[in-house]
Image (cartoon, rainbow, N blue to C red; front, side, top):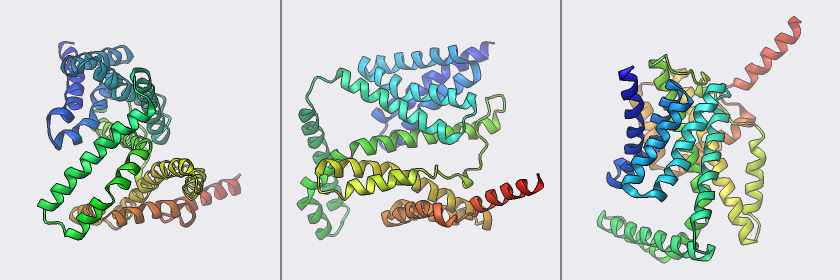
Length: 321
């Protein structure tokens, strides 16, 4: 009982430290921060709802003591809420797709409402403020590229188009935020499933083989909508369309990665070759676009032949009966 109490307190503190790492640990903190929901998820599924709520509150208190009440509220509505929703979805065994999507959507919506409630500035003032931040980031990137010896023509192109680039970066923030919440939700779900295989006393997560995962077929209509709006001359419609495409193509990129992993497993490629492929994906944006395209066209080409097998099983069942 004593050790359980220690873990019940240590896990929320660990969650707060994961969250705070982004503010105090350069580079590495940005990689640790997205896993802040995981310790709360552990407490919830190990000790129950009351313990999970207590853990979320304790973590928020620690965050508030370091960075203040507003940041503490942000932590509660983003990270802690995501953990609670993921835990509830896992308990209900709704599957990875629904669990990840619902947790990401609810935590993002709650955070957005929080910013609206506490914000005292107009939309124009917020836009101008974000524009200044992005422009500052671009200027810092230009200095870094020059010191790193990047060709002058590439640096000059960035400088000459800095205004347009910064404006579009601000306009796609909704899509970028949705991507961030989706990735955080997915990462915590997958890592929890990894832990559950070793700590079998935890509630089981969806056992779906991720190499066979694919998004709902209806998502292609979101892609068509986003593409159609992005081609409209009206600037507002174009911005909405681009934001939709950012989210949809992330999902299809995830599908493409599942397809690649399926082939890795099928041909039993060594780990160093797999890592080489993933590193190339990170370094080459055009390859990432190709992977997303493969995920999209999987709807028609069925690269893993998983739909064909499912259809054959249904026909066999019909014949048997």
